[in-house]
Structures are given as structure tokens and as C-alpha cells.
Length: 220
Image 1 (cartoon, helix red, strand yellow):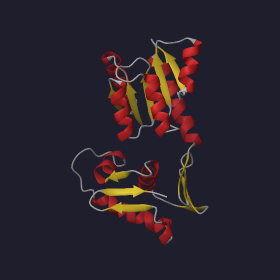
Image 2: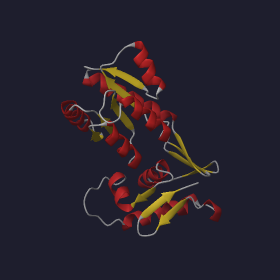
Image 3: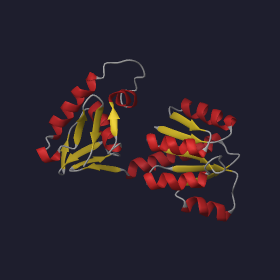
């Protein structure tokens, strides 16, 4: 799971990053709201930890901007602001949770786990006639279940999750295979061909397209 931390206090970023990475999360951080916005535009995250008072772009502004792009990713405010009106304002902007500074890391960790669990239980992704039930790890095509290997499922899930975006081979090999060194990305083509064969889609259902020399894109 990938978490974006947008926080202007270096000590808090270091504290959170160390603790969350020890729990197995992949962490990206930004020290101002504008940088956080740029990262959100370029990458997909599974959860955002967001400070309220940020330079260049406030946490509230960033929260609203994220929601214009993404309506489902959990956003947790970490802030010293704690009046009822401020809490309501944050929730109206699209935040899912609100944790007052100073906070217990153990409490934050449990809240993160709850949001991930809720998100997983509720999520069904679709791509044309393809439906992925994330909580059950099931793939259906026109209502009929398709059996994929674990890696095939993870690759299909990744492409559908990033629907409309070109996924480069290097991104796929890093995010799906978790390989961060030079590696023959030709293995991806083998898995894509296997997935296409198992999905057995019609010509007009060509939802996974090859971007020659770059990678793949999933589109309805």
C-alpha cells in the first residue's frame, strides 16, 4: 500500500516514514501543499496523510483538489486544529478522518488499517465488461468468473486501478513485481498475453491496449 504524507515539519515526516515503512507501507512525502498536489497528479496513492497548515497550498485546498481527481482514496488530516467547525470544514472538503496533534502512532496505525480494510471491503473495480471484486480477489467477465494466477490478478488490478493512464513497463515492474533494479520487462508482455487469452474478450472489448515502446493502458 502506498501512502502520501504531506507535512511541512521534517521531524514528523521522518517519524511517520520510519514507523510506517517498518509496517510494510511504501511512503512518499511532500513538504508543501503544491508539491503534494503535483505528486497526486502524477501518481496514485492508497491513502493520504495531510497536514492542515501547509505552505504554498493549504491542506484544506489540497484535500478539495484531491477529491476533484479521486473520490475514494482515504484522506486523514493530521492537525492541531480541533474545533467542531474546523472538523466539519475538513470533512466537508472530503477528508475521511481527523487526528489531532500530538497523536499516538499506534492510534494512527490502527486508523490507517481500518481505512484500508473498509476500502478493500467496499471496492469493486470495473473495466467495460470486466469486474474485479477486490475483497474476494475475483474477476468476472460478463458475469462469468475467470481464474487468474496471483501475478496475473495483480497485474490486471494494477492496470484497471490506473484506468485511463499509460502504465510504463518500468512502473509495472516496480509496482507489481516490486523490483527496483534493471530487469527484463519482457516478462510483462508474457503475462499480458496470458491475461488477454483468459479474459477471452471480443474485438470490440479490447480494453487493454499496448502503447508501443512504452507500456500498456486500460480503457473502457
